Length: 423
Image 1 (cartoon, rainbow, N blue to C red):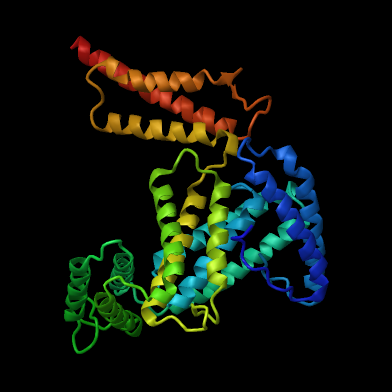
Image 2: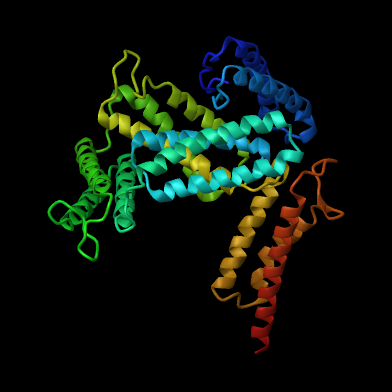
């Protein structure tokens, strides 16, 4: 619990008993989650879930009374409860994009698409989940939509003719920030980005970017300001050479390690990854984010971080939230108990697809390792179901479908190999 974000005082005194009860329920759930000796079973948390719904109902009533239904406090994907944690991540990302004041239309399109999917999730959950829970979740979605609309409006004047230049500048700025956090500072790489910026500036005529028809498309100020920021930031980064102010080294090291761990997870999709582990990362990030004073990082004496330290820490914070967002939206609606098997099958499928794409195998014998692994997984089933003890974890359909697909691809490769032998 040490990495939990600081709990802010309720906006209304009537909320304090609700907060106290919810914190108690959170502690009980945390104890369940920390027990690594077994998987969390649905029936273990149903009574706690019902108690949470009671508190949600009480909270909705209180907030309706003082006219703040959209106020935010602090499951599974494709189900209504998962919307709560996902909106927390999206809210953080959108707030950071707004604070950074640079982002591409693609960033906003992704968030918009995810919010629409979550809206559909809530619609599907109307007959399943408490209306009190759905009201709270809908309010959280509306808060995210409001921020998204504000961000979209800031790019409304950007002409399609200038969008490619704008997206390239966003990419360069982020690449410079990434280079700034490398273990060994890549000066030549940053110099290369600076040369790209000079090339982009060289395309301007009389201080304006021109379209193919020699007209000046809309959004000049947006792109020109971003270009200036890129030059300024690249200059600062080259001067500092990746060395952050020692007063903020502890915070930097913590964020650096979290970013690297999340990056490894995003690359490997580790078989042992449990979605609840992502929430632990997010709580650590929230704690750092909420420690800022009026948006500024400060040391123990109240000294404010300089521009280099501020932007570097914000980049690591923002990148980590982005990794969590990406991992959550890519996770599958499968029970934690089945995730190790599901992830193994995903890896096997990727390998088999790659073998098929590269021309197949020269002999059926080359398929033995894949066949042995698939058969060992198939033998884990009892009457067609994967069991954990006497429980039947949810997600059987997804795992069985993936297993069947792997067998089909392996069969196709075997037939092809037999035909090659015959010829």
